[in-house]
Length: 155
Image (cartoon, rainbow, N blue to C red; front, side, top):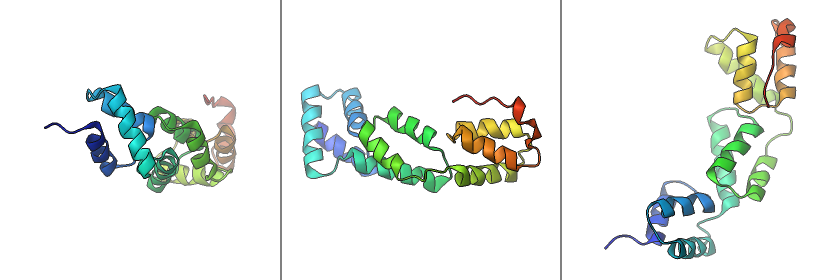
């Protein structure tokens, strides 16, 4: 007998926390009927196993444990995975307002890997989601910061 949507959802949640929308999409792709998917999601939420706030906090914590990242990138990743906007905002609110220390940490790691070009560093930090303010402040601190006027960062 094939597993039910609930059984499959429990199996997926056993691997890692999921967001409600993300888990619903996975179950739908596996061919479960929409009403069975919704019933399974409601049951799991009622049991406390499916919680977007908890999943968002876990996601942000695990990503920051791997290395420094900016709020912009984490917000984008949370949206892509289907996090509830309020849950994402709550998880991101736990991050420090000033991302300059984290940007410095990312720049130091970039330097250790042989990075030299300040323009490439600026692009690297922008991809990691750091604010323009932090990127420019960090570049001004560096000896090669005289080329700042040449640097354009998309936000």
